[in-house]
Image (cartoon, rainbow over all chains, first blue to last red; front, side, top):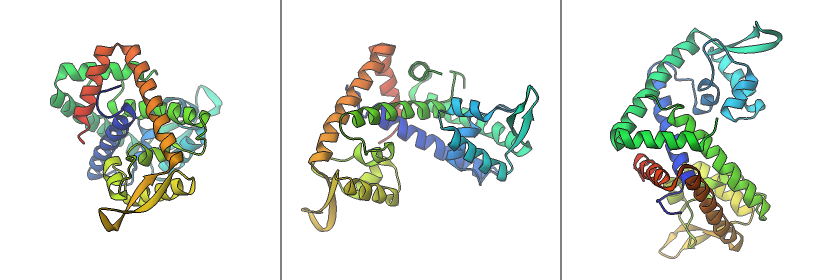
Amino acid sequence: MSGGRDVGILASHLLGAFQKEMFTQLAAEGHASLRPRHGAVLAYIDVEGTRASDLSDRSGQHKQVIGTLIDELEDLGYLERRPDPSDRRAKLVVPTKLGRDQMIRAARIRDEIEARYAEKVGKPSYAVFKNVFNLLVQP
Amino acid sequence: MSGGRDVGILASHLLGAFQKEMFTQLAAEGHASLRPRHGAVLAYIDVEGTRASDLSDRSGQHKQVIGTLIDELEDLGYLERRPDPSDRRAKLVVPTKLGRDQMIRAARIRDEIEARYAEKVGKPSYAVFKNVFNLLVQP
C-alpha cells in the first residue's frame, strides 16, 4: 500500500494533535484539571446521563478503565452517579453544571478544529475524508 | 461541522482497531510479548538503527516515554543500544534479528489492513482519504 505514512501512524498523530489542542484550549477556559484520558468518558456522555456500560461500549475502553475515569471526573466535580429512573438497580453517570460547561466548550473547540482542517485541505476533500473515516470506523 | 462523529473520536477508534489487529496478528506469528505501546518505537525505527531522540521526534512521544519503551524492548530481545559510528558520544537503537523479523511481519500486516480498507471504501476514495490525512498530519 502506498500513500505515505500508514494509517495507524496517521491516526496516532492526528489524535495526538487533536487532543493537545482540545485540552490546551479547555485549560485556557477554566478546565485545567482535565487530561486527554478523560476524553474516553467526556466525548461520549449525554447531557441527561449515560450508563457506565454504554460509555464503555461507545468508547471501546474496558469497563474497569471507564470506572476509574468516572471516579476521577466525579472527584474533579464533572460528573455524578445517580439512580437510573428507568431501572432502580442501575446507575446513570450525569454531568454536573461544571461538566455541562465543559461539554459546550468542547463542542465549540471541536467545531473550530474541524473547520480549520476543512479550510486547509478544501471542503470537498474534507467531506470525502470524513465520509471514508466514518465508513472505516463502524459504530 | 457536520459529517457524523468528530475527527478525534474517529482517529481514536481507527487507531484502536488498527492496533488490535496488528498486535493480535503479531502475537499469532510469534511476537506475543509486544503491546500496542511498543508501536511508538517499532513503527519508527530504521533497520540500520535510529537515535532515541529521533524516535521521540518521529513518534511525538516524550523522550522519557521512549526511553522506557526502548528498555522494555531491549529486555524482550527486540532492540540493542550500540555506539553510533558517526558520533561516538551518541547511541543508536538497533533492531536485533527478532526485531527485524517483527518489522517485516508488521509491514506485511499493515499492507493487508490498508488493502482491506481500500477495498471496503473503493480505491479512489481511499486515495483521497490518505492524501487528506497526510496533509493534516504534517511531518
